[in-house]
Image (tube, rainbow, N blue to C red):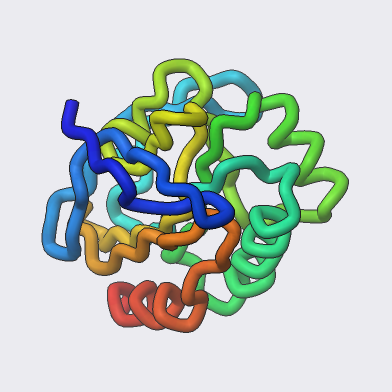
Length: 172
């Protein structure tokens, strides 16, 4: 598996990502994640919808909390055929608890804790920590990636406006 040393930083310290560097125009990889009810969820089950896929290290950290709440607020404004999915290595039970406590109902949270399939397929697995890097992918109805942002500093927030605009454009 391809390694990308120094692709991101955590508090200024270089981290290695494992997996490919995906770009706009690439086919979105399919993989199976775990839903909050422990059911398997294939990313291909979202085909036919525009999907904002946001990967975060852990919902229980301040920046991930802010980001997921922000996408939750924006999700209702995007239309019925745009889904927001947040993926982390958090256990499904922790994701469900966090969503309930945060009042997040418009974002689907999926866990990559079993095999790191998302992290490896999307090139966002932080080798040093076995957590996911902060990234946003917008996937169109046909399963093609339309937008990619890898947040270079894990503690930084993504460019919400650019991701939301890419989702709106893909939904046209």
